Length: 442
Image 1 (cartoon, rainbow, N blue to C red):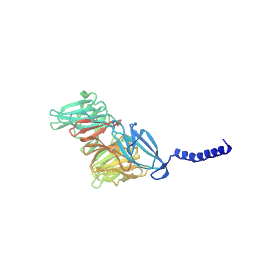
Image 2 (cartoon, rainbow, N blue to C red):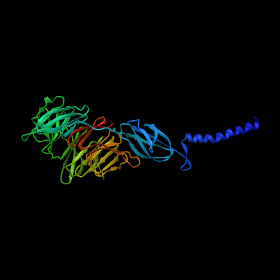
Image 3 (cartoon, helix red, strand yellow):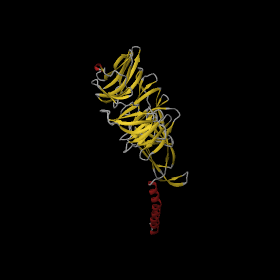
Image 4 (tube, one colour):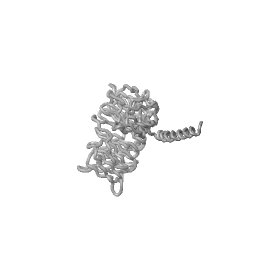
């Protein structure tokens, strides 16, 4: 090989390197030639995570052959239809814009099982009351012989009879995880009874509670609060002993070892706090428009959230000195709950769902519906809510992809009552015939 030939080859290699090296670097950095645009562009990245994992990811109906959690690179900028599929689960679809030189994320997606719902009992249940912090429910069934108080263990599906064939039973209050107070009406007389879940045969009548009570609420395992003739009273559960506050009140609530109660006149409702130990030393917290239908919503910390169920007005009360600061929400609300610890509040009325962030005081419309919403709860700490609507149980995705929020129907033929298990794995509900059902959530 002559020196001239070697020089030509050497220069050719240098030229090829100078051409290929930048192309390789651009390719590694995510640049591609877009034949439709006839130009070199920077591609984007899509990250998808789902619960459960292992779902196949499709872009514009094309299988990417990746399963969640997945990171898909070198995607041309544009709007894509994204679909997740997994055997035994309902598929998920959304629309997302992929930008160049950026990563788009889809996270906290819940894939709901595509399973038939399971009936737990064919008995016709009427009144139900959940036992706090327990996967158990008290319920009443009725037949020609009378009414029966039953205990439903949601974890095992076991149904136990606690009181059978009574003329009329009403569940007053759950005292703790092993006992509750019920009322039995017979021959025009009303009596109260303590029922023990583990040993129902040891249930005992509370003979000294011989008056008509409402809004019964436990203070501890030896005392309760109740309204008697519109007065707030403290009753002993072990002896005939009671103390009543002298004021006429419309409603009361317990929170953080305090009692909050309302009194009212023609123009104003007054919110007070007091100690459940003696019902003395009341402190005025706030003045609100007059109403007999205020309800306290649990709020972390020292603040209060109060809804007027007659007018659908929502008030946020900050207990500051020398006087509380009161914020009235401009949007109507019939109930609310915290999505994250004192950071984001979800509140709703019959046809709208809103969020409110405490850090920036921003209100955002999440969804508007054409049929009235019943009860609503959050799904663990995930961006989902579960609600009843027109005899259905619906799951709504709070995150939107392409201005579309997915709504999944989880159950139909709903009566009014439903609840979630403590681990959020199951949903339980009564159908229109009072039968008890279970639906797997994940």
